[in-house]
Amino acid sequence: MKEEIIDENLEKVESELVDETVEIEEKFASIEEEYKLKMEGKVLDAENRAKESEDKYLRTHADFENIKKRLEREKYQAIDYASEKFAKDLLATIDTLEMAIVALQSDAPAEELLPKIKEGVELTLKNLIGSFEKNNISAVEADEFDPEHHNAVMQVQSDDHENGQIVQVLQKGYKLKDRLLRPAMVSICQK
Image 1 (cartoon, rainbow, N blue to C red):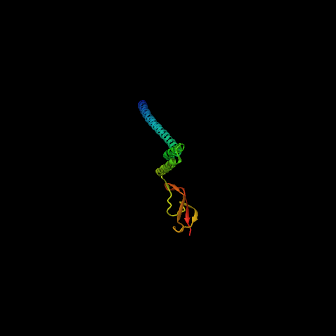
Image 2 (cartoon, rainbow, N blue to C red; image 1 turned 60 degrees about the horizontal axis):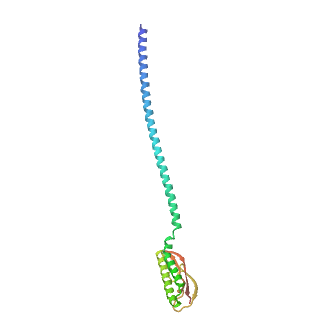
Image 3 (cartoon, helix red, strand yellow; image 1 turned 135 degrees about the vertical axis):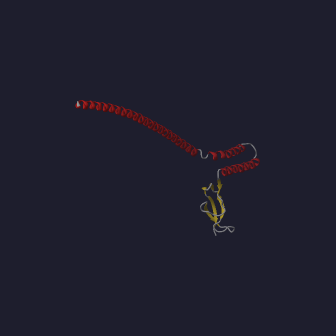
C-alpha cells in the first residue's frame, strides 16, 4: 500500500510536473515568439531608417554633384565672357570710326572734311576714354617719376625741371584698377 500511495503521489507529481513543464514551454514559446516579433519589428525599422538615410545621402550627393557641375560651367562661362561688358562699351567707338570712314568717302572738299574728321576723332577718343573709365582702366599719372609705373626711355637736359623729373610723356601708360597694363614711356631730366 505504501508503494501504491507513493506510486500514486509520484504519478500525481509527475503529472503536475509534466503539466507545469508544458505550461512553461508554452509560456516560453509565447515569450520567444513575442521576442522574435519585436526583434523583427526593430530590424525592419532599422532597415527602413537605413534605406531612408541612404536615400537622403544619395539625393544630397546627387544635388552636390549637380551644383558642382553648374558652378564649373558658370565659372568657364564667366571666364569666356569676362570681357563682354568692355566689348559692348567699345561698340560706340567702332560706330564712330565707321561713320568717319563713310564721311571720308564722300565727295566733299578737303576744307570741309578736315574739321569734321578732327571732330570725329575727338569724339571717338572721348568714347574710348569713357569706355575705359567704365571698366576701371585709367591713365598712369605722370607727375613724379616712379619706376613701377614709368619707363624712362631717354634723358634730356631741361632748365625748367629738376634732375630725375619727368620732362615729357612719349606714350601714356595705363592700369586696370591697381594692376599696371602698360608703363608710361617718358623722358626724364638729367643735369
